[in-house]
Image (cartoon, rainbow, N blue to C red):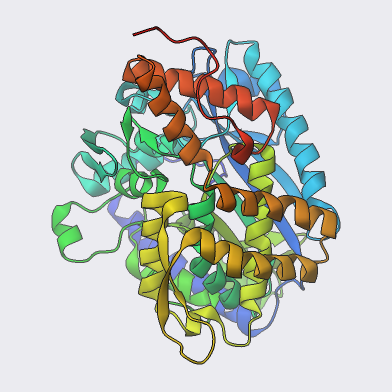
Length: 505
């Protein structure tokens, strides 16, 4: 969805023409796969982080246009709402001291962006959901001034045909409605990309699906929305409900939501693109002039523009990506389950855990997805989002007994997944110093049962106990969060509570 999109209304013929072009693209992809035209392995990873803008008072600032103008870097882009930015880091080869190099790049980029934001009384906050957001902040007038966002909002609202219902029951319950998709902008995420060959794609995607729950359990960082304490990672239910094109009747019929975990393990990347076409109507039926089959017949490489655009409007938590670089097509798995933050060290610890464990799981002789129903992976994901680091998950038993056992997420990560992640990073050629530093952060979170969500909730409640109102406690928690985020120590070392004075009695 990063490309510039300009279009007016769509007439009745546009969707049929777009559907025809999608079928051509799918045929083109099938031919590319059959002819083995894809790039060879390069062990390339990529990283994107969505960010919030907030003032010194902890409240959101609708200033991304002004801030981006001051930053003046292609590494930073708009996101859905005016309080959002996104930073993109150029692809790196997995190996050596890659995570330390990424840490240096990110700290430099974010510090520069924060200084520029300070020129308009704003600052960068890297967090799953900004705790101080209110319903009035998430309205269509606060969408970023970019054509594609207004057009996407218009099409999703038209497809739904009524207001969006937000109904999330966690520690507390939130129940309200929205007239636009803008509540989606509350969800600020980290996207981890991994370029893979077509032959390896299904194993990597299946492994990423299987481990998504563990990622969320240790990385949860979004417990608040609109002043309510909800799930430890409230982004997934919020994202699902704020992009849901299905009125209740279609939900009752079992029509699939556009924000989707999936429903089965796969044996080819083609299956995911085929599902996109079969299950999801076009939201942005904008046709490119390219004829992908003619390009293939001439020996060229097609952009498959319609397939790429359509894929960008299906919000899988692990998304397939087709792209062309230097005239050669490639496939990537885009992992989208993680929230932003709390610190650069935490983000890269989450990344190291993911890249390590996915490689190890993908190369197992008896893969986890042959021993666990897909429905269990989906249930695990929901449990991890609800309960964060305190979640209990179902996982295949070791040894000959087989079957599934219920286990604490922290025990699963420490006893089974961290050793796999260590082996996976070794296989990538990551140096032991990098491996041990960043996986050690994950181990310490598990040992202390502490992550961004648990820190936010505990600090908020201490503020309430000290006499702050709910709104004051959320704002003070946000200010303290930003202060500790800038200091850079990983979140498991953050002292719970507010440093600033609070009213007595």
